Length: 393
Image 1 (cartoon, rainbow, N blue to C red):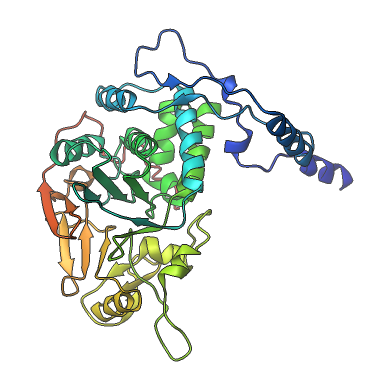
Image 2: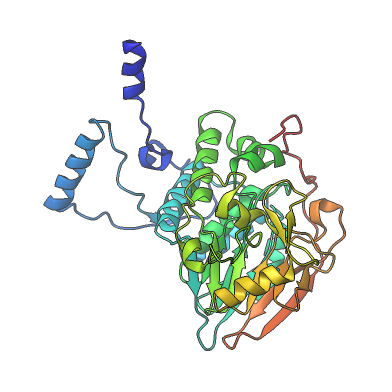
């Protein structure tokens, strides 16, 4: 027993992002793809050296990873990356590690609910599920314009699974977030979770593209860390609540005040969503036509009626809910007297549904324009090609 406890005490329980030594990974000289620029290394001050010494002592003298990578994302890298992936080419593992370490650091600093403003001369494009349909993602940027400080985007979860280009999709989205942290936004969806990723293909795709040994397993672990750090929801100009799934089981009664935005801000999101609570309901709930609430047909969270929507909006001084999570034939659906909009951005979902995709453009005055689009051709890799059909997660 003492021996087992001694072994356990020597195990490093820190997340991989805090243990990984990026200098263990290099770029092969044969690589001809997009190149990340490199910052000049900064000289460590005496205070920084002292801080590292204290951290090492607090971690039982375990080796700390080297300081953060010096590479960084610029516009040229992201533009070349989009084309590189379009040509079905891969990034070196080091670059994937760098991007994931940097996105984890950035996302950790965000609140669970992020406020978005739209300044004059700018706009915000809200997109729903893209589910690894990389070539349709490129088409969205073709139709709506590439992301920029004045052409903002909010992707409302479910970046991965089902579609067989999930790796390319999420890496490009993360790269844009690093490039434009103040105008490119990402919400978590129910498919940004281990159980979904193991069954619906993302884990299998990562292992297929980066190897089933060390690199593939570590990269999947870092993706999981990043997904755990994604915000739960965004509020646009204090008026539009954007969340992947929907609303909540808690109602306004004499004993309870209902779910407020402050409660959403305080959600502990740095974990798997689970099957109940505000985090799970944010990612899994669906609207219904009838008043009130019902058990969700998915087996997780609830279905909520127009009265529930009205009550939530009134309580929080909001005008509209925008959510995703459900395929719609026309790419979007306006429900609950115009106060609950579903946006779904994966056309011909799973290569067989025949639906359109859609995105919505929000102007500074909160006027809204919807754009629908059909699927584009993609390389002959079927949807769900990497799914684990023997798993029951």
